[in-house]
Length: 193
Length: 193
DNA sequence: TAAATAAACGGAATCGGATTCCGATTCTGT
DNA sequence: ACAGAATCGGAATCCGATTCCGTTTATTTA
Image (cartoon, rainbow over all chains, first blue to last red; front, side):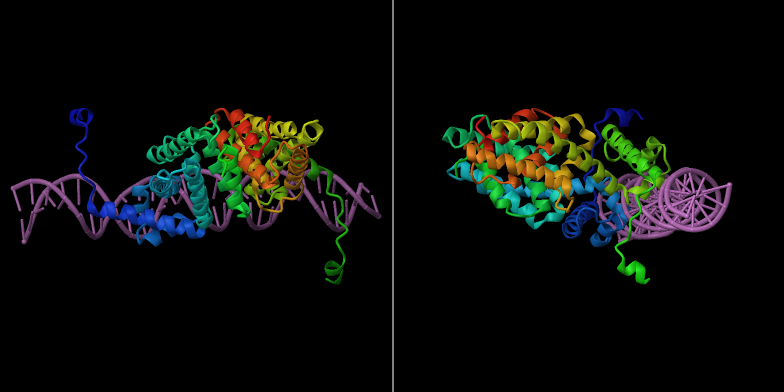
């Protein structure tokens, strides 16, 4: 008792098989949700991962957490794209447009993950790195855009979040010309082209 | 058999108590969802309506339909506001801003209904009148705004839908300065003021 | 290398909540 | 007031998420 309440817990590295199963489950969930939408059932995910339901629950406390984890994983990839393909652009306004277009493409191609990705970008929870990273990319692009004079000075990260969420909703429904919407949204931020 | 397959069904007017109960259930649901969010349970709605669960299901095929009905009812009121308070404005751009601000106010004040209202505006389903009415208001305002020269000629109803959905997401989360977002979104549509 | 211990597994059992069913009750038309 | 039709209420059922625990496996230790 004394030990457990005072020592900061040595934190033995997780067992190898546990770590492997965790990623198996996450990958399987991502695939299943992408294909069937996030109403897919837990047993289905477990089966796809070649694992028992119990194992799924050992790694993710509940269905919502699993869905969120998938969304955050996808978001992390989007942020990575933002850092490597958008931030480096000469014109920040183009970088911003590319960032949003990429998000639109992902949302359109992976409808099943759309809700969880939207949540990753829009949720208020301290999701941590994912959300923070996404906002960091947006913030840098906006700042640079303002210097360039291609972005309205009163534009904020929140505006970009709103665009992403709106985009997700629109794509989830009509799937229509979301590219045009992105274009207009950029125009709205003051980005001229 | 011959009769049932050929006659268009006389459709006797629904029984008085049935009609009364339908609205009781709808009203109770609206209140319960507004207060507790749309995860509130069916039995809770039934209790609030002073009715058995069976009765709830007699009028609404399932939970989703009930939630949707609530959202559509609220949407109808918003559309009504749009027609009476926004369309008549001298400046279409101001009418549009007022329309969006009103939506923001409702979303903010009735968080629990936020998701269903958003769905009513954004869903692809042939929701019918509700959605159509909302888009009608937006379309008229946009058209008039273009004549005025206060709205970008390439703006479309879809852009407004996107704004509404984005707004809903933002309000559901930070609840921050959504008013600023509305302002910026309007600016994005080309509305100068 | 083998035994001991801790951690992870699998999947049957449990639980909660949506939905269905049907006998009892309440309208409506005659 | 009566017959028939529609509606009610709420217990019973169904389904899927989550929990539990005996078994199996990785890791550490002797």
